[in-house]
Image 1 (spheres, rainbow, N blue to C red):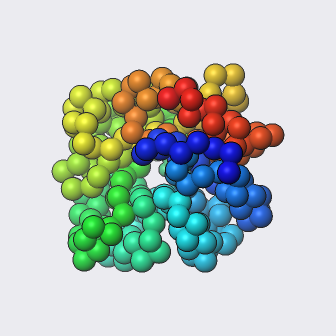
Image 2: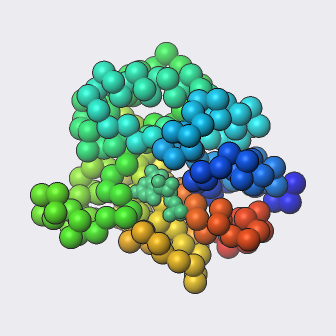
Image 3: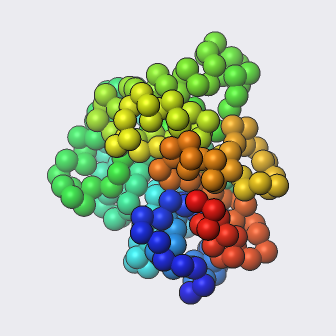
Length: 235
Ligand SMILES: O=C(O)c1cc(=O)[nH]c(=O)n1[C@@H]1O[C@H](COP(=O)(O)O)[C@@H](O)[C@H]1O
């Protein structure tokens, strides 16, 4: 183990590897107290629930990022299936609407204190105003995020995924208990890639982000554990 243990680590490392061994090699170098981990569509599609359980068994808090978006009954069942895997956090798309989110929340009632945090994606951090216009949403990203975050809170969820650019406004509007999970994080000097609404780790925390989702700047570094430690020192 090379990474320091922190109380309530803020970094969630996005394990977007096509190769299970590369992911496990990284995990072997870090301590579960130094970060949380996220498995998204790429690794889940390759390696399935067995891989999720492997990570959970290693005592990492795991965010299962499958961004469910379907009719309420289907999403409710998928969210409950995620809870059965023992994950720490699971998400849906807020644009699936109030009834879908309420059904997802209700499906976790029977899990009591073992229920994962349930959060909703607002506007993807890869999207800017022009992308919204192309899908018929003639609104600026901030306004749309605000609207979806309000709906998410009303539906009883624990927080939202948004860009750190929206964090300060959302904290003011929705209170500090409502969790803000922010991808689109880039340490100074690193490549933005396909992300559009980005911030550095320190800026994001200062803006009010509760958790920072960081993928490629860590996973594609020559020494991922070292980059994670360096980021932890800045926040
Ligand atoms: O829900 C997410 O985690 C998510 C939402 C969003 O709006 N933008 C976003 O980038 N993500 C995820 O966050 C991670 C970001 O990875 P990097 O761009 O490599 O840091 C990816 O796994 C995305 O799927």
